[in-house]
Image (cartoon, rainbow, N blue to C red):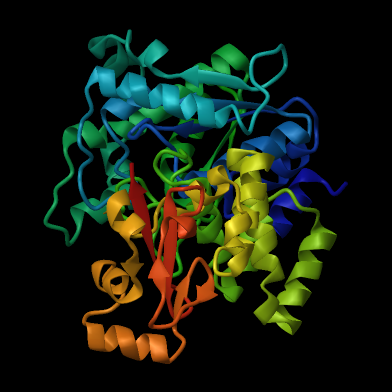
Length: 425
């Protein structure tokens, strides 16, 4: 097995490090306690958090002790790093529900609870009882406002933007630094991990431990996982892919990774899966020599879905993806088909109408796969219309026998425009 630093570096997970020479050696000495924070600003983590969850797991696999810190305290304020607008403040009830959802997802990646295993902590436990005057006296006096405003996360909000930075958000850096001190005192935590946008916050915590405890601590950041347009994955960034199956179905999650561009798939395999180096390099070669087979994308989709939703859901999603656009769709189980169709455009159709015989022209119009009967006839004559994966002609009549598991008739125009007719009871 390569050293932890060698593995992290090869996977593209090292962006910045404090005290690099010392930290590289410390990474390969067992028993290092490390932490990453997750603010509960939603009831689910998203794909932008996957890298950090995997990173904690990598440290645990190398004999270190990870702490996943859920920010019940800092979540009431919101981190300005990487944000152009101030976050909405959440109620206590919302924070409690969000913390519970995030804790379940963290538990899929880490072995939590036993002595020496991962720790799930909440900074509301100490921030919620901190007195304002004591905090300002003991912590605030160690921070220079001149230095804080030079941090990228702060400067970006102060220069050239209409949205200002509130004092509430400005204080976030102090709270995160105090978290590091508390975890250092209680658990002997020496290393804080985070995305590259956290560098300023992390280094403040390293410095505060030095000032208050006269001890050495470390920080390490990783490049952010970004979308194909270079934008950051984030809960408030709009069209996100979530780890909660109620928000993003396992099939849609699988499909998201299956659609990865060739130029991105190698990086994602390194950073978001636990596949060994030799296998990833074989998949790199397959992408270069046979990109049409999408071997790397299929491996990525399966491995990430397995990590988040489990092996059974990954297999169901893989099976559905393989046959959804073929006549073999009829062989999918009800559960697999329901997941595969969860995000497809759907029109409800009464059972009596289908029992009477529902002609394909009407079906194409009601599903908006065709804008007129003339267009529908043209598509049918071109062989571009499919019912449950089988090509249909203009004489096709839909009946209850076409309803897969008695519930769904899947229409398709061309290669990818799909619509579901769901039969009402």
